[in-house]
Length: 96
Image (cartoon, rainbow, N blue to C red; front, side):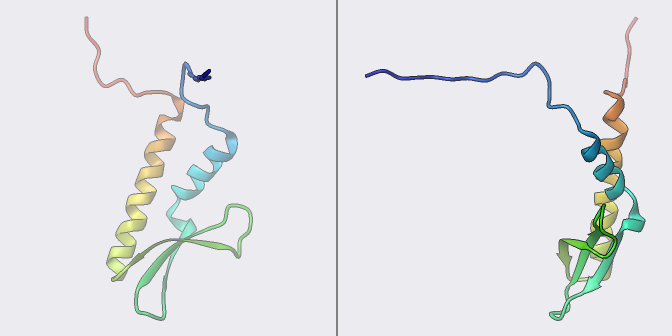
């Protein structure tokens, strides 16, 4: 019996495309988010589609408006950090 093995390796992480960068910048802007109340009383966070203004994508559901806004704030912060690292790693300490 013959076995065939195939492996892949990459020397670096996959490159970030312009589309991905544009989406991250869009998601990092709080003005592109909204909170809607659902019939069951929960609050849903949604972000506006990058290309179609009247299209919204649901992300999370929370029991309170405060919880929904906190979810949006943490998501905006997450994408802001991703944008910050697009130019490469941040030097935090150097040695002499």
